[in-house]
Length: 378
Image (cartoon, rainbow, N blue to C red; front, side):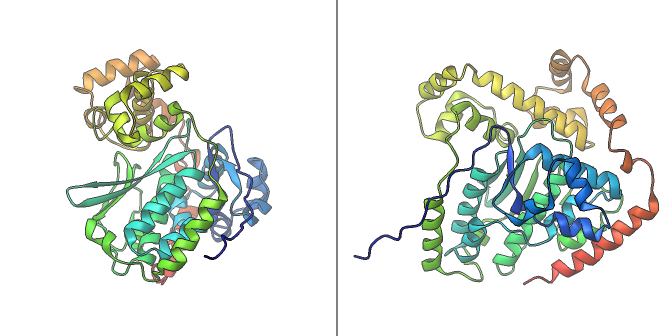
């Protein structure tokens, strides 16, 4: 039997706050250049240097990427900045190659999702099956994120691009984006190749038929795939998170699907409900506290980034009606949801409210050219 290969183990990169692997948004410099923005000065504002993009494995605070997106949108009046970032082929490292060389799209996508969830601690990538439809979703879990709409645009564009490049004939059923309808949705429609797009959605997601997962990727190579899995395993994972943190990460997507109970969580983690309760007690928190926090976080995101009615938000978060949602929200924040939403819109990104039409028009022209370029990617 051949001896096992000795691959040097890298030191796990841990972080006390939510982080994002910089390679996942490695197109930022090129998008800044295309929009004629000053990358270096903007990076200095958020405490980074341009050299950070030379190491795609570097972990950057999620809040820093959020602020970088905010400044870019403010400076350019480009409401599809996130989409432009996601349109370019990303550098996802080993997980990206797993998707390319997997024996089936399902194996590759499952490996990709698991790997991304290990390195992106500010969001959760989900993969769910219901009634023959696969949903690939992206839920921001980092607190106080301003540009959720832009970040989700980027994430869904990346996911769409990965599947389109890897799987021959990939055709989604629907694209869902938790953002207001853009003033000019043409770039979204062009990049997503005419796939129906639902704006003002409750979550960022791509829906497609389960049969697609049974197809082999264009470059399928099972032997190379197994070797890449070995490399990824030897690379090491991030430090184990507490039970409370693991539950926090899955709640954003879970609370919209069903009523969350200890039994529900226990089933997902494959342990007894008493184990969940005991480990949460060790973290000095209850499941009820975590669920309520997740519901309020989700409510704030939908109020801030969509035009969903209070009734629609209440229904998506499993409140009995809009009145019950309003009472709970006011008890938590001291304001009704409508008043809170209006206050957030007053504080919205100035560049999107000043009507700088010439820069917005230029951003649209640049976006159209980039969409045409990437639409033809192999």
